[in-house]
Image (cartoon, rainbow, N blue to C red; front, top):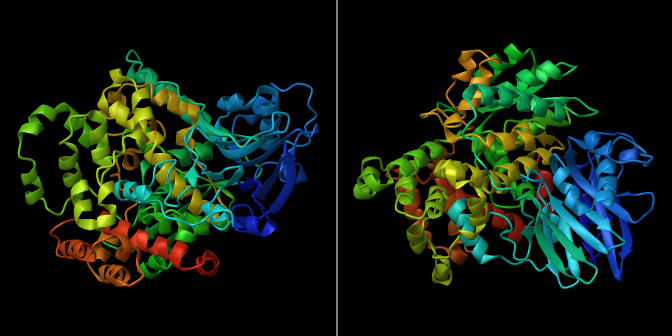
Length: 629
């Protein structure tokens, strides 16, 4: 796992690469070369996990010198791919060397054969082309900026943003999208001109300065309605265990982020079965009376696994200290309260291991979230619900944002628009109150384009919920949850692997009928049935908590005052674009428990702090204050 960066006709220096040294503290290099009439720079920071010797160093060239790669990630099936390559005298046993020669032999389309997590740049000097590639489910991020004959790309935005070839401007269309979803789907970022490469795609940039995007993985989903529950459980168990064995591939020990829930407990059981060393596990929790403290549950699971367990409590001061400075690493104002907690548990893990597995990616393909239960009810009773005065529910339960989103989404007859309604936080009506006049034209922007391609590939025979799962896995997961997972773990020089997103496993899960995912109101049904052979029922039947934080409570107290101070500032983000009195009204309603605006207020707080990081304060001034023990 590493950091990559590069450019065409834009100077990159070692100082530029230093900005992502946290992604790879073990080694660093930058090279310069011609590509046709253009000058190319390639940079790399290395976190040594497979092939610890110099044989794994990057940028890496073929012996013929015509092909080069800078690679971030892991290819779990690279040993299988290497067997297909004949007559090559490999220098080492790294997956980077394998795929470098594999792409030379079979071309860029051969990326479809890679099972892993990755973002890389590949240069073909013969064809005078540079390719940027992102993995199937977007576990690893990759950003790029093009302007005429210039291209800059990197694992993190800061390298592009700080380059003299880029002029720092805000994308207001992206701002409107962010307020809707609390993240920006690919290719959008709030930095005008800087794009996220979409998952399962590659960008081709030629020596004549032409660029074109290709989707390399667009196989339509097909549901197998003939599979029995017994057959499905057996195959699921086989594929998940195969995924664990693949992702334990490492020349250093692999640890586990252990929550109090089922997903990480299953991973721990299978890891313990196949590890040749004592498994190390890591957990974080809050003090508080809500679902904030999973430490007791995690400790019980750790005792069952007989793991070497480490945990810590976070208090409010630790949380806010990091959150206020976290945007140096997240770079996008992703409004997810779990970000500081993930940072601290990654920091804890980094003292003991370089690689961890985590349970991220289990909920989207197997219907683990409550919103999927809501969609099941909406789809089944849509005609009846359209006749009911659902707005009364909002009056009966005024302090429940989930009910508000359900009511909002139920208004749409179009299925995809209903899905978007489920995700929507700031509705068009709320934006009418929030926006100053300069933004009002954006309110009715259609945002279906971010989801339509995936929606159209989902099998209609599977029903609406099956399509929603298919879309979530390819949009919300890569550009929201996986994005900040990568940023927070790599901020601590930790590689985070996600076994539930193994390609073979996902292909199988997506072929299953919906009743094997959401059975009645039991989510992740097949996962739970498989776990019956691995874990006691006390763990399987634990209430799903997610990872909750006390942020909602804090907004009822002094955190609300902090937000007011920020937005009231004469040079605040909100003063430029929003109606301050509208924001204060939201804060008052939340504090008085008339409405649940926790997520909305967190979005606004995230925007203000992101703006301070990237538009009011130089990034280099923030960096030293990020790490706090």
